[in-house]
Amino acid sequence: MTINRRSFLNACAKAGIASPLFPGVLFTLASQSQEPAATDESKPPVITPEMIDQAGLIAGIGPFTAEQKQMMIDGLVDQNGSIKAIRKLEMPNSVQPAFAFHPLAAAEAGHAVNCSEAISILQGGLRPSSTPPTVPENIESLAFYSVYEFGNLLQQRKITSLALTQMYLARLKRYDSKLHFVITLTEERAIAQAKAADAEIAAGHYRGPLHGIPWGAKDLLAVKGYPTTWGAGGFEKQTFDEDATVVERLDAAGAVLVAKLTLGALAMGDKWYGGRTRNPWNPAQGSSGSSAGPGSAVSAGCVGFAIGSETLGSISSPSTRCGVTGLRPTFGLVPRTGAMALSWTMDKLGPMCRSVHDCSLVLEAIAGADGKDLSAAPIRFDGGAVDWHKLRIGYLKSEFDPLPPLKLEEAKPGESADDMKKREERNAFQKAARARREYDRRYDLAAIDKLRTMGVDLIPVELPKLPWGAMVPLLTAEAAAAFDELTLTGRDKLLTEQGVEDWPNAFRTARFYPAVDYIQANRARLLGVQQMSALFEKVDIIATPTNGDQLVATNLSGHPALILPNGLRGEDAPRPPEIDDGDNDDIGGPGTPVSFTFLAGHYQEAKLVAIGAAYQDATGFNKLHPKLD
Image 1 (tube, rainbow, N blue to C red):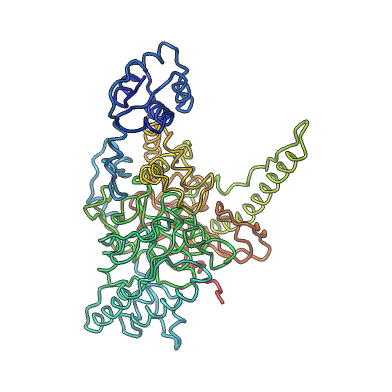
Image 2 (cartoon, rainbow, N blue to C red; image 1 turned 90 degrees about the horizontal axis):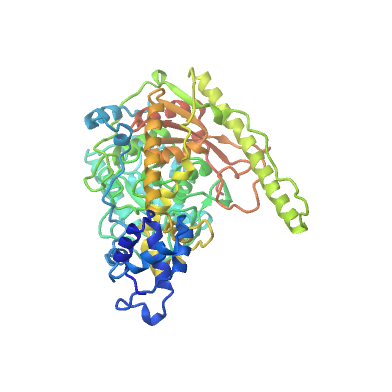
């Protein structure tokens, strides 16, 4: 019996088959069963009752009666299928779906959203008050200065942008062999920009606090005239004819782009087609990802600041591992036009810097809708001042409670020697992970104590009790759609990593995620957005460890986060494992950074910046830097 996709879908509907995954799986099984000569358009594939049983098992529906299966087969007559027609369109990664996620609208479902009201909320960044920095004799001593300090020196013409740019280019070249954080140096562009900045400043045309300051872009941002590789094999020579919106805005602010920095292939981890980006505090380990290069380069004093991206931890993780300050903005605050799409409803661009003050200055330059990104909100971040003493600050109480007893696997009757060895290895792994968590917990508790000594009256709160992890397949499904061509053509084999948890396998697996369940997960996500937003009606800020359920919850709900360095592990810290598998940020060992995170309501970055700057000024952890030589 020959089949066709359109008729098959109709027949399934008549038979009462509700899962939209089932027809797709069955159609694929039937197509793959044909002889090579029968796979052309003129000879549609054959389907059998056994294939229906197999497809139903994969889709999680059935079993079907013989009558139901025969009814489906008898109704399959037309040849042209809808899926094949869509595939023929060959849509590039830049094409967005016909829907857009807007977290504020989701949170206020049933209420009119007043954008001007939201803009007024955002007014109130900060302007640090400090004495003007001095100029050392050796310009390389400026490598770890802040954006604010550079701005002072450049505006007063105590240094030149050209000298600063040349210094950073030299450092990028010198340390790249050790840290592997550069994909492409934009040297010619940078020198031209630096000379132009110096001429403008000398003529009295000072554009603002980023004018003349060198920066690095995660290489998922398009820059005209240079490759945009996405860190992935098979894309090494990919180019675009336009700059990303964020690049255009930083150009307009007078910032100087010196390099396109590494990211894990297609924004996963810290391994890219040229190797693995390293942690400046411990080069034996990766810098974490996927904003691997931005985290490593900022930490190593090789750029003034960087732009990273986060879908599910990609600013947070390298900021933690490399000891830098990362600001993951509210979803939609910074337009992503010209950036690689991984998940249209979760991708976010944000600054990675050496201080909260710096993040504020950079965010001010890049925030606001561009008329192209469908999810970008008509909201801007405008500098000013927020009194952090007046903020209601909560903390996720259960995250600071004593850890529950560790449950280890027990021997089973008749256990073989091989099974016993594997069980003992798993138990040893669990013990080591618990020891690291117990050690790092003291830094989280110290942060809470510090806030109290600053006069903060902490309010205990908890995350909404929802299956946050069960919503993560939304990300993978969107990513599989964004890179569908790789899966269909087999080009996914060009990607460096090919393990169980890597993109090629994840993309293939995501094709079996039922459309109905995708929609159901989005409905659950709406509940999450609403319940998280209700939490921020009780408090303005939530203090929390960087990892844990909040990382998943806030990325799904679109809430902003500020990740701060929170000290260095001592010599008594648990020793790191011999192999860094990239799964955990707490394995650094002695002398490596830890982090702490503040969360806020949608578009409340000004409040985040206020409390974050106060905490950073009170602790000074951001002034600690790795020794590279």
